Image (tube, rainbow, N blue to C red; front, side, top):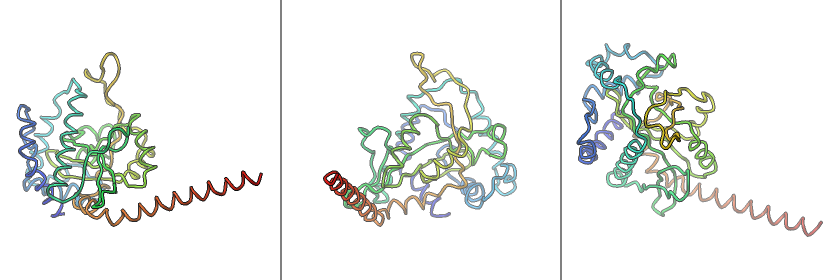
Length: 292
């Protein structure tokens, strides 16, 4: 637990100048990009030691100031958001992808970069080993606003664990087809900066897709101004909310990325085996064609 908290503090410190510059004209929530003792206790009790979803009010006695944090969160995020800005949402997401990539490279010695976008619908980012082989892919989602009314629309879920949103649209379906054909694993990485819970969490793509198959669509939000451009819908309103308590911590992600070389040889061997099998199959078919 301590290692993941330390890593997140290190990440924030590394990114702070660029974050402050990017948000210099934005009225941020009072606890945004701040990690303190309350944040650490939230991580411990809302995530690390929490094996079953509990109402957030149950933690007020365990986490001093949490009630005040929840009040400030509600006041800030329950203000109606009447407009959607697809372009700004995309730019914001890309900014935090670059921050994470640079942190991996500069602070952890992980060779990470943006994936080649000429390959449409591939995951956005990748990791290479020391021989320059691609060993895994990952997507990054940056979230600051908990889904405060989740308990009303999805009984049994809570805002702190049930706000890890994923859009359900053509892109995710197309991406899934690609990911399931790749030899390299893919991960969905969530950068959460809620007023209460903060950190980096991830889930394997296989588990994400299993969850989508299980729940289908969990929420179809109301359409807003900005969801349309030239009378065409450009924003996604259908969503699922991945279960945070089943996701893995930052320290595990860093370990996996740094040790992917162990798996790289396995991936290469698998490719060679597949190619050999394909070659043998073609050779057999060629022989049969001659025979008949």
